[in-house]
Amino acid sequence: MTKHILLIFILFLYLSNIGSAKPESDSILIKDIDQFLEDAIIYRDSDKKKYLNLLNQAFDICKKENNRVGTAKVYNALAYQYSNTGQRDSSLSFSLKALKIADKIQDSSIKSNAYLNLGIVYYGLGNNEISKKYSKLAIQFGDKFIKASATANIGMLYDSTNTDSAFYCFETANKIFLTLDKTNQRVLSNIAITYMNMGTIALEKKEFSKAKLYFNKSLSLSYKIDNFDNIVLNYLNFGDVFKDEKNYPLSEQMFLRAKCIADSVNLNDLFNLSTYALSDLYYEQKDYKKSRDFLEQYINQRDSIQVVDIENKIANLQMNYEVQKQKDHIKILEKEQKLNSYRIFITALLILFLASIVIYYLNKRRLKVRRRMALAVENRNKTQEKLEKAKNDIIHYTKLIQENNERIECFEQELLNSSSKNNEELTRKQEKLRGMKILKDEDWVHYKVLFKDVYTNFYTKVSNIPGLTEGDKRQILLIKLDYTNKMSADVLGISVEGIKRAKQRLAKKLELKNAGELEEYFQKL
Image 1 (cartoon, one colour):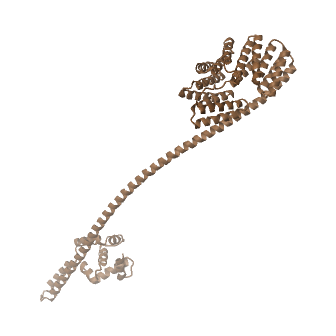
Image 2 (image 1 turned 180 degrees about the vertical axis):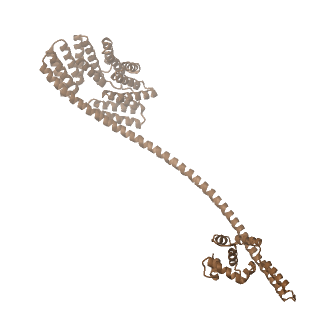
C-alpha cells in the first residue's frame, strides 16, 4: 500500500514541475506575460490562493490588451493549477479554451501545452485512452520539454499495467530532459522525478540495486535544487527498499528521516505518509504498540489535513463563487441594459403608434363633428324656415277666419236691416250663417298640424295632461293663440257665455281658481 501512495505523490510532484514551455517571441508584451507567469510560479504550491489571484490579474491584462497569446498561456497555467487542486472540470474547461485559441492563431507551443494538460486531466479522471491520445498529440506538436513531459505522462499510464513500457517511457523522458538546460530548476526537478519513477519500477521488480541507484541519483539532484518534496519521497522509497530487504533498522532510519524533514518544512501530506510507513513497518516487525501509536498519529494527522484541505477547498470555492457572482452580476446588468434599451425603443414605437391612432381618430372625430354641426345647422335652418312658414300659415289662416267672420257678420247685419217680412226665413238664414263661422273637423286637423309645428313642446305637454277632451284641447290651443272669448266663440260656433263656462269647467278640472288663472297657466306652459 505504501508503494501505491508513493506513486500518487510522485505523480503529484511530477505535475507540480511540468508547466508551459517558454517559447521564444519577439513581442515584448508576450515576454512580459512569460516573465509574469515565471515570477508567479513560486507561489504555485506555497500559496495557491495568491497564485490564482496573480493568474487572474494576468488574464485581465491580456484581455484588456487583446493579447490572445498571453490569454491562452494563462488558460494553460490555470488548467494546470486546477488539475493540481483536483478541480478537474475547471482544468478541462481552461485547457479546451487554450486549445481553441491556439487553433485560431496557429501556435504549436500553446497547443502542445494544452494537449499535455488534457492528457494529465484525463489521467486524473481515469480515462487512460483519451489521456494517451492527448499525450501523443503533445509529443507531436511540442518542444523537447513538452515531449519529455508527455512521454513521462504516458509512462504513468503504463505504470500499473505494463511496468516494462512504463520504465521505457520514463527512461526516454529522462534522456530528453538530460539534453535540456541543466541550470533550469524545472528541468532538474523533472530529471529527479523520472529517476524516482524508474527506481519505483525497479523496486516493483525487486531489482533493489537498480532501485537504490535511481533513488540515489534522484536524491542528489533534489538536494541540489532544494526540492524537499522529492527529498522526502526518496527517503520513503529508500525505506521501502530496505524494508523489502528485511533491513528494518535502515528502513526505520529512512522513514524517520523522511518524517523529520517533512515536519521541518511543513509538508503535512508527506509527514503523514511517513507516519503511516512507520506504522506499517512496525506492524511487519510485530511491534504492535508502536504500530498502533503511529497509526493513531497518522489518523489524527490525516483528519487534520483533510480539515485543512476542506477549508482550502471551501476557500477556493468561495473565491470562485465570488468571481462567478461578479461575472453573473455584470451579465445581468448588461442584459438589463439591453432590455431597457429594447423597452425604451418599443415604448417609443408604441407611443408613436398610439399617438398616430389618437391623432387619426381625433381628426376623424373632428371631421365627423364638423359634418354633424354643418348638418345640424342645415337642419336648424330648415326647421327655422319650416317654423316661420308654419307661424305665417297660422297667422294667415287665423286672419282669413277673422276676415271671413267679419264679412259674415256684416252680411248678417244687412239681413237684420233688410225689409224682409218673412221672419221664419230670416231665422233660417241666421242659423246657416252661424254654421258657416264654425271650423269644420278637417279645418281643425289642418289647424292642429300648423299649431303642432309652431308650438311642438307646448302641444306635447298638453297632450300628456290626463282627462282632457278634444273640446278642452281646442280651448287651450285658442288660449295659447291669445284668442278673445268672442273670437273663440266665433271659431267654435258657441256663444261668449258658453266660452266662459267652458273655461271655468276646464279651470276646475285642472284645479285652478278661475279662467284668468287658466289663461295665465297655459300662456306660461
